[in-house]
Image (cartoon, rainbow, N blue to C red; front, side, top):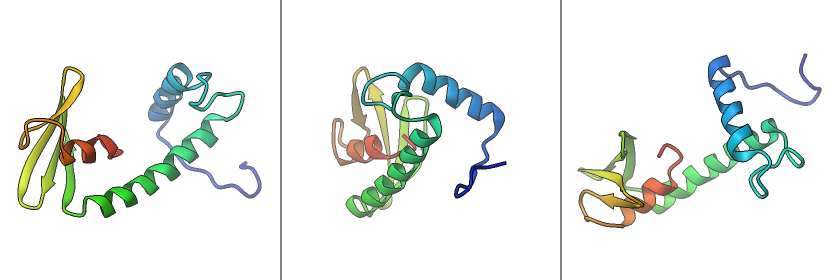
Length: 115
């Protein structure tokens, strides 16, 4: 039975197990990243979800002509009006297939929660 005043969010058990394991190893206990002394996994996940929704709203206002098409093995594909753009990692930096370097497409990709 759930806690009074709360609702539940159902996750696939396998996905939850992987998320929780990753959170325990990457996020939990690292100052400034959701230490279990300060936040539970659920509280942290809720905050990240809320921030992601706000981020999508900001991205839509900043880049109204860009659409995230999908992910690739090395980056993502973006539609900019009628142009298809690939943004990918090249060693330690993002590179755009149209602008051959860091640009607005790279900014969009790096801010997008699906990247």
